[in-house]
Image (cartoon, rainbow, N blue to C red; front, side, top):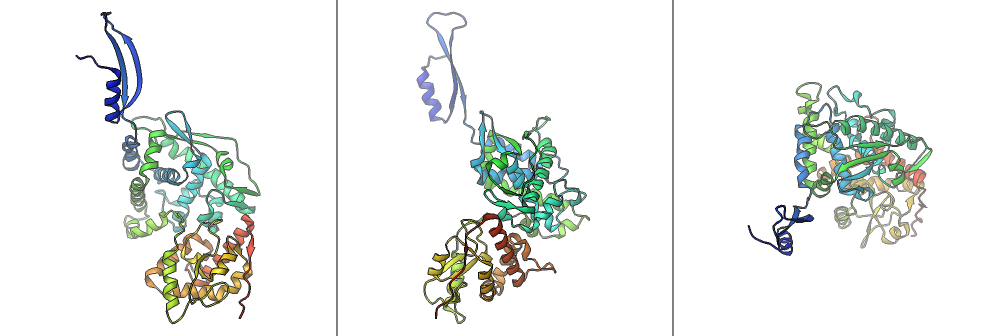
Length: 421
C-alpha cells in the first residue's frame, strides 16, 4: 500500500474521463496514529450508451402482441430528436414529457399505416383501440397540420381532442404498462394522467394544451441515448416494425408480398426543410428550353431572374414538397411575402399551376413518383374518387388546404396584381 494525495487522485480521474461522485474523510478503523483515509466514489459519465442494451431488448427480444411498443419508441425518438424544448428534467434520474405530445406524435405515426391498411395487430386494424371515428375523421388534414403551434377549429378541433384522448388511453394501458425492465414488472415509462380534457371549438397545439393530458416519464440515460443516437436507433426500430407487419398479413405470404419500400414509405416521418435548389434547377432548365418559364401568379415570362415561391408561406405552414413550390417573378414574390394566396388567386392561376406541375414533375419518370407520394402524404384530399392522384385532384387538395389555413390560422390573404402589358 502507498500513501496518496487527494489532488493526485482527482487529477488521474480527470485524465481518464472519470467523474468524482463523492468524497468521504474517515479515521483509521484500527486507530493507528497519523493515518487517515479519503474514500472516493468515481463514475464514468453516462453518455447514454448504457441504455442501448435496454433498447435492444425492447426492440428485438421483448414479447409483442402488436406494433405498439415499437411505435412508442419511435415516437419518443422523434420527440427527442426535434422537440426537446418541451422536456422537463425531474431530479437526477428522469425527464418528463407532455403526455399530449406523445399522443400527438402517436397519431402522426399511425396515420399513413392505417390509411394503407398495413396491419398493426395480428387480428387486423379493427382491433386498434385508438383508431376510432375521431382518428379517421382527421384523415382529411395534412400531417403538416399535426405539429406544435398549429390551430384547429370546429369539428377538427373536437376530433383532435378526442383522438389524442384515445391515444393517451391506449399508450397508458398498453405499451407504457407492458414495456418493463428485464425480469421485472416495473414499467420503464411511468405515466400520470391529469383531469379530463374537455372538447372545445378552437385550440392551439401549444405547451399548456399538451401538458393538460398528463405526464410521461423517461429514464434520463434512455433519454440521452435517444437524443444523441436517434439516427442510428430509428432504422433498427423501423426495420423491426416492417418485419412485424409482414408477419401480421392475413396469409403467410401476403405481408411478404408487399414491397419493403411500400412499408417504409408509409413509415416516413415528414420533416420539412427550406432547400429549394432542386426545384430551382428544374425551373432553370425550363427557362433555357423552348417552352420557357412563367410566373405562376402573373403569367409573366421569366427570362432572367426568378424566385422559387412557397405557395403556402413556409413561416406559417412549413412544407417544402414539390407541389408547394412555384416559379415567381422576384418583385411579385416579395409583395406576397408570408401571406396566403386567396382562393380567387389560385383559381386564376390554375392553368399555369397545372402546366408547371405537368412539365416540371409529371412528365419526368424519375420525379413523378416523388411528386405523387408527396401529394398523397401532405394533401389527403388530392386523391381522386378512383384512388389515383391526378393533377386536377392535386389542385382540389391545394384549394382545400388553402381553406383550412385561412380558417384556422387567420392568415393575411394576398391577391396578385394583374399583369401590366
